[in-house]
Image 1 (cartoon, rainbow, N blue to C red):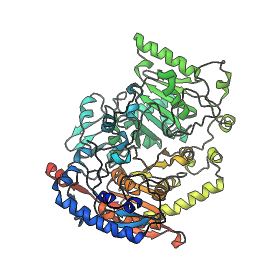
Image 2 (cartoon, rainbow, N blue to C red):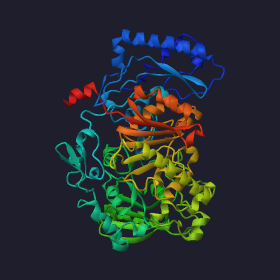
Image 3 (cartoon, rainbow, N blue to C red):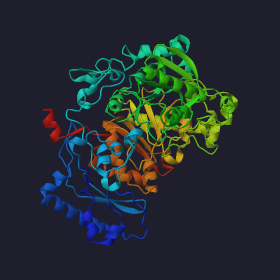
Image 4 (cartoon, rainbow, N blue to C red):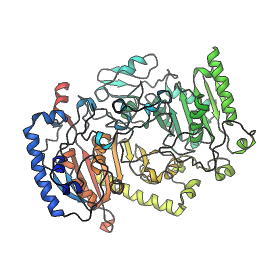
Length: 633
C-alpha cells in the first residue's frame, strides 16, 4: 500500500503558524525556493518546539511507528547509533531546513523497490497505459506526496556481494532470493541454484553451450581476426536487447567490449538485478514508446537473441530506434526462429522483415544456422537514392537524434551528419586509444581539443586524490560497479581505466549532448534527472561519485533529502559515496550521516581551499532490521 513516510518532517507545525510553512520545511516536497526575508531566529525557535512536539507525539502513539514502517536496526560489527528522534536545522541555499536524527526504515516487502518502475503505483493511481505498447514497463514516477521517504532494508541474510571476477559466475542466493528463473530456464543454462549460491554457467535461450562460444561464432561469421569480437578494437560498444541475466555482456568483457545490457522489469523480473549483482553493466529499460536514453550513433553492434520483440509493429518503429543508435557500418545480430524456421508464420515474418531492412538500406553481412547479421550503410548515399514516398521516410531535418529524455520514438530514419557522411564512418580511433582521443563529434558540443585534454588532466588528478584517501578502506577487488552521477565528458571514468571497474556515466537532462562524447570514448551511460529515482534495483552500486549534484538539486528546487535517500537505496552496504560540492552543501549532508547510518571516511578541501569546494567521502554501514535477523536465524 502506498503511504508517505514523513514522521520526521514536523508536519504538525504547519498547523501552528504560517511562518513555518513559509520556511518550506515539509519533507518530500519538490519546492526548496530560498526565502531571503526569513526571520531565522524565529524559525529556529519554532523548529525546536516542533521537534519536541513530534517527539512527544511519536512516543504517545505506539501505532504510529508500526504504520509508518519504523524499525529497529542492528549494525553488523559497527554498533548502533543513539537516536532520540529530535530534529536539528541547517541553512542551505539561504533557507533553514530541518535535519532529522532518524529516518524510518521501509517495510521488508519493499526491499527491492524501484520507485519509478513500481507496478503498485500504476495500479493504485489507475494510470491508463497501453499494455501492447509496453507502456507499463516504462518509467512512471511517484509524486512527492507518494514517495516512500524511508530507508530500503536488505533482504534477510544479506551478505557483502561476491567479488569480481568470481561474481560473474556466482552470487549469494540470500542477496537476490529469487530462484524461479533457475527452474523456468533450467534447459537453457541461465542459472543453477547450488546451496547458498546461484551459479551462472554462461548459457542463454539461444546459446545453451555458453556465451563465449556464441560470441566467437558471431566474430567468425563476420570474418573478424582470430574470431575476436572486438575486431582489432573497432567494436567496443554493444547494445544487448532483452539480455536476460546478461551472460552475453558478461563474456564480452574479456574481449575489451562493453555492453549495455538492457531488459525491462517484466515477467523475468530480477534479471537486471542478477546482472548487476554479478558485476556486469546493465540497465532497466524497454523498447516501448519512448526513445532509449542513449544518443544516436552510440553502438557498433546491437544484439537480440530470442528477445521476443515484434520488430514489424508500428511501421518498424522499434527497429528504427536501433537504427538511430547504431554507428555507420554498425551490425545487428539477430538470433531468432524467423531467421531459419520453415513454418508459414515464421517465413512471413522473415519476408516482411527482410523487406523492411532493405528499405532501411541494411544489408545481410552474414547468415548461418539460426543467426542473421545485418550491417548499416557507411554514408547517406543509399537513403538519398530511394524512390520518393519510400517508407520508412527520413526524419525531418529539424529532428535532434540525440534528444532522448521524454522524447517519443519516431518511425523515420535518422540520417548521418555531414561530418560522418564525408568521413564514411564515425571516424573513431580503435579501443583503447579511443578513450583518450578527442572524438570528431566534440565540435558539436563546442569543445576544443585543448578543453578536452584539460578536462582529462583535471579528473586524472582528482581521481588520484580520491583513491589515495580511500586506500586504507579498500582492496583491489572492493569496488566493481561505479556510478558517476554527473559525468560531463566521462573523464572521471577514463581516469579509472586501470582499475577493474565499470562506470555508469549519468548526464543531466540539460547536458544530454555530452553523452555522445562519453559513448564516442568507448564508455557507457544514460540521461537522468536526479529529482527522480534512478532506474535500478536497490543495492546495485559499490561507489557513487556526486560532483556538484546536490548544488544542482537546489537550483532545480528539488529536495536534497530525497536525493540522499535515493543514494542510500542505490548503494550497496559497505559501499562508498564521494561527494564533491560546495562547503555549505557538504556541511548539510554531514548532518544526515547518523540518520542514514553512514560513516564519514574523510573530508578535505579542493585545490588547497582556493575554491569553495570540499570533498566528503562516506561509507554506508552494513545493517539489517531486527525482523530480518529473526527470519535469518
